Amino acid sequence: MSRDIKVLVVDDSAVVRKVFSEQLSRQEGIQVIGTAPDPYVARDKIVSLKPDVITLDIEMPRMDGITFLRKLMKYYPLPVIIVSSLTTKGSKLAMEALSLGALEVISKPSAAYSVGDMSVQLAEKIRAVYGAKMIQPTSDTAKMRTPALAASKALAETTNKLIAIGASTGGTEAIKNVLTRMPVNAPGIVVVQHMPAQFTASFAQRLNELCQMRVKEAQNGDTVTNGEVLIAPGNYHMLLKRSGARYYVEVKKGPLVHYQRPAVDVLFKTVARYAGANAIGIILTGMGKDGAAGMLDMKNAGAVNIAQDERSSVVFGMPKEAINMGAVDHVQDIHRIAEKTVALLQTM
Image (cartoon, rainbow, N blue to C red; front, side, top):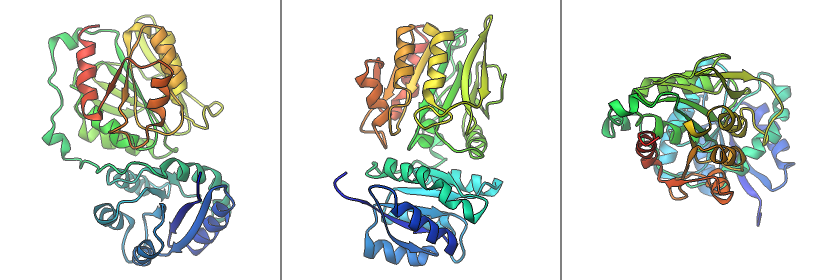
């Protein structure tokens, strides 16, 4: 890294600002260049200090973080990491922030003394979003302009097929882009998005409101069925299993894989084992290499795999790793992945 990443911390808590500043400044390659107690102060410091990355609390006085983020993305787009409370309101606001262009979300500790415990995790997210491509997000009304693909009899006959999707940084909007275009009778879909606990339920709920398919946060033992999407819950791995002709998921704790839980590799490797040539794998925007090895296992087992292309990826790390490993059959712009997936399903 040629120079330190310049970070501005925006939070109404003086304790959080102080601890974030101290802890992040101890992380290699990161420099906290300023803090702000509210968006008005933050606006002035962005202009004068020109940060590379902003950490943003979304529940603040004077101007809430959502309003500020909307203005920021319109006039001065920067990589933003949302620091949100674990309340139901906080998780819903975090999902709204991601739809407006924020790239990552991290949960705010419930006690001030534990803020320092998350500094390493926050530092990793800062490194992930630094230099990320700021792609103008589509609004939740975009589905109206680009309707889901039509259901077809041929697709309805693709029994025992399934789709596995993995994503990280920038992935919430990429996943939305794919799922809102999928027809109501598409085969069951299993999804791993790197996201903290508490937030995946709101993510699934938001997608359920936008998609023709039913979307829910996965629970242990859920059956993978046509017309339904299962989202891996935060802080739990999701594995595919099979009993006769029935696919189901196992949701469980376990060691971090690529520093992640849930991890894409954990899902993809079990998809390779239990679905094989009946599966389509999709790897989307994200930093690191999670999913590449699992996708190669899927390809070797007969699955067909798609990677998001560099131009439409916020961070091209995960797709690039899978491509370089020889695990990918098709590279597609995010707006063409659903169409390509449906076309492939009809030939399987």
